[in-house]
Amino acid sequence: MLYIVLPAYNEEEGLEKLLERIRRIAQAFSLDYQLLVVNDGSTDHTSLVVESFAKVMPIELINFETNRGITQVFRTALKRVCELGQENDICITMDSDNTQNPYVILDILKKLEEPLDIVIASRFEPGGKMVKAPWLRKLLSLGVAWLLKHVIPIPGVQDYSTFYRGYRVGLLKKGFARYGEALIEGYGFSGMADLLIKLSTLTPRIGEVPLILRYDLKEGGSGMRILRTLWGYLDLIQRHKTYRSRIKDGTL
Image (cartoon, rainbow, N blue to C red; front, side, top):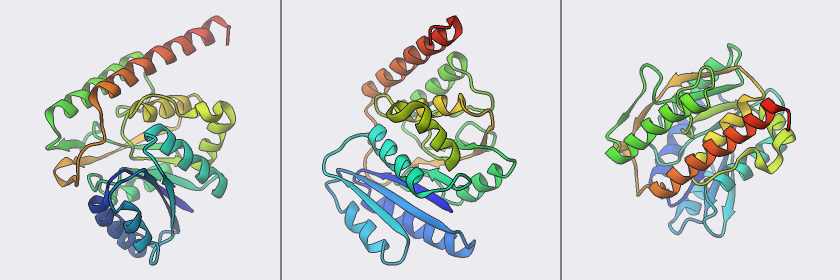
């Protein structure tokens, strides 16, 4: 079974296009799948879009009354996947704003067969890139990638912060068993880097496939808050440096 997790905050237009594309791909390639959409306190028609597609697709909608942020969205969704899924099932997470090509799901599934436990759709893998991203966001993405590669290196990983990834459900279960709610921590988008770093302590089998991020196709505004995001990554680095130091000196 393939589980596809989509976080959604005021994504009515992009989500509608993305769900239709996923529906066509699933039919064309006979994918056995389940969608989980987490509506993070949207004030537009996001929930109505999901409900309309639920009539023709296997979708479970989780509604938050207020905006709770990326960390809580993925913590809730991945725990739900672990409740539903088996060890060898696959979970793919991605954005809902139509900037990430859903056909890359097929590339991720193929790459997982090597076998790997995590496959990242990477903007920095050869063949990947960002198209028409705002210069500040592009600079932040490149800077974060460079910094984390040097401070907290993970073999095979160049893109630490993208949402678009495939995981074996068995690995997610091991992650929650070891870290509990703390499997995903951090401010804003840094939570996804935190998740990746923690899961990398449980497996070396991590790889990437190229992703062309089409920011020119983005519908609606960005959910990223630059200062909060920067603070989140600085906090992430400090926490993991402390954690690794305690492991090294035997105090953890």
